Image (cartoon, rainbow, N blue to C red; front, side):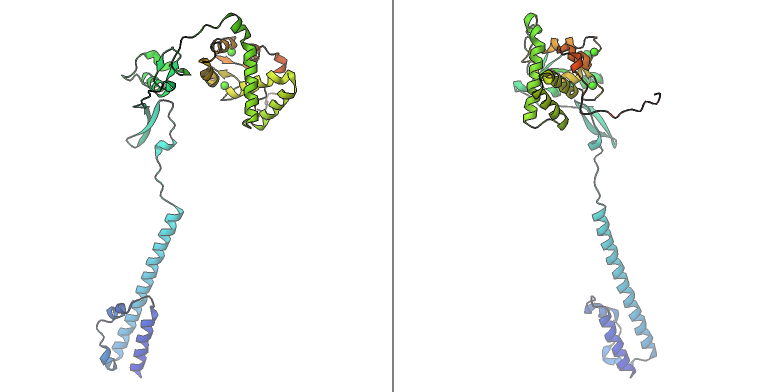
Amino acid sequence: MRSIWLLLCLGLLALSSQVRAEEDVENLLPDIDLDNIEDFDENDEEFLQLLEQKAKNQDLERENELAQKLADVQHNILNPVVEIDPCETMHCGAGRICQMNKDKPECICIPECPEESEQRRHVCTNKNETWPSDCAVYQQRCWCDIKAPGCLNPENAHLHIDYYGACHESRVCDGEDLKDFPRRMRDWLFNVMRDLAERDELTEHYMQMELEAETNNTRRWANAAVWKWCDLDGDTDRSVSRHELFPIRAPLVSLEHCIAPFLESCDSNNDHRITLVEWGACLELDADDLNERCDDVQKAVPHLLG
Ligand SMILES: [Ca+2]
Ligand SMILES: [Ca+2]
């Protein structure tokens, strides 16, 4: 009877681990002579129980091992290890690039600018000098900023681009040209606004203003003037700095010899900023027609003192 019971135990033991291969069972029972199984006594029974326990333990270990591997895979999927480049979040100004210095990102002057042989890539600076590219101007400015050996003149720390293309002899704008310029500028501004509206490149707010300009003659130039002034005022501080004039000045200077003296004349109090009142006066518009109708209306600041 005992022998039958033992055989049953062995059978159960073999079945208890379906994933285990037969060789494993043999490894677990290295010393059992299956031909002489009838000779088993109580000690053998105890021994088999130990073996069964060992087998269970091994199953448990395998299960734990697999569970851990699965957990690791899931963890890696949910928390992928992303290599963060510290330079990616570093913003360096024009003419500078980010470089790692002892594990810390820092901005350095761009070491080399691409060689530009094309004339149209050339730029003319405010000192009326032609430079090979905008990169070269910004690099020079950076070198002079940090007093690097590449700086050709300390004043170049304030170098800026006046317009794209090689410098050309500037025609003098005077007399009739300058006198007629505000009218031409008003027309030009309105035409630019109309073009943008036709191409659907204005915001909803400015679309409304353009529509108003189309249908109301008194609003025609005023709306275009207000739109352009708001558009130039990038930092929305309600004045247009010299720097903010760049987008209107740079593309026009080479075509329109009066734009530079015209823009100069707009800053009537010479504080390097053009207010909407100054802008309107410069375009010879009625101050009453000019309302500050920028699309980026700042949040009203509560007047705590009434
Ligand atoms: Ca501004
Ligand atoms: Ca001013």
